[in-house]
Amino acid sequence: MSRKPKSSKKTGPQPQRSENSLFGLPLPRKYRPLLIIGVILATLLATWLGSQSRMKTLQKKFASGRWEPTQAADTGTGTATGASTNPPTGTAPMESNIFEPGSADYYLSEAIILFHQENYAEALEKLLIAKEKAPENEDVYFNMGATLAKLDRITEAEEAYRKALEIFPDYAEAHNNLGRIQLSRNELAPAQAHFEKAIEVAPRNAAARNNYGITLMRRQQPAKAEKEFLQAVELDPDYTEAYVNLGYLYLITELLQETERFEKARESFQNALRVSPGFAPALKGLEALDRAQAPELLARPPE
Image 1 (cartoon, helix red, strand yellow):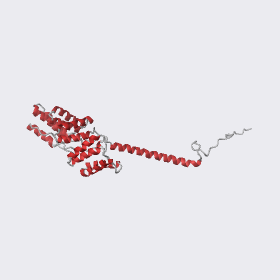
Image 2: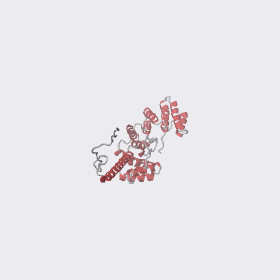
Image 3: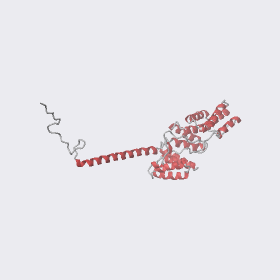
Image 4: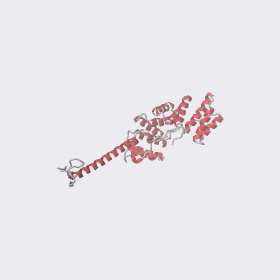
């Protein structure tokens, strides 16, 4: 007699699935589309807020007075050399469309682009608009000084640099450029004070050290000047003018103090020619060695 196979079907009451639940939550079916739409809207809102936050951070970064490309380089006149032409590591050229059109930062960025295109008159027009919109922005005044110097309006340039320093006293490049103007007038004491402040704020500013060295040479302090020129070429191994100034220093001290430094002078001029073959001031220095005459200290011309 065979046995009837047992049924695998369970007996007894079974739990019923609720039509009013979603992912285990007691939510009626008719409200589910509203929940889904709410989740989508919340996600879109969070994404938008995040993008706005990133944009504000980017704008602060570019608008900061400490961001190097907002500083137009090399604006002095006379025998002092200007700011180093080597761009800082990790920075990129400023783009005019980063800022909201009509803002002070927008006009400032436009002015910097025009400045580097050597369109100084239009650059100044943009800067005047930026000044109206942001009368306490030190970068506006710094770039006004740079642009006015290019237009040979030196007194106004000096006033603009002073205003930048009034707003931000530790503005190294403003100290350097103001010192350049004073050095061109042979106002050695105030020029030296500005170069010293620039170096205090930015010790790796090769141009300020070179300018400081020129000032020290004029004040009959060749030993201190040598230290600054050597520091300048250490910071910037391709600093042609600093090599030439160092060669002139060795030549001048040889003539004045009768020391044995002609070979060091020759080496410095040859270093300058290594960086810039055929560089006329270095060739002139070598000729001066042969004639035992000391030429004027070299000045890098403004950009």
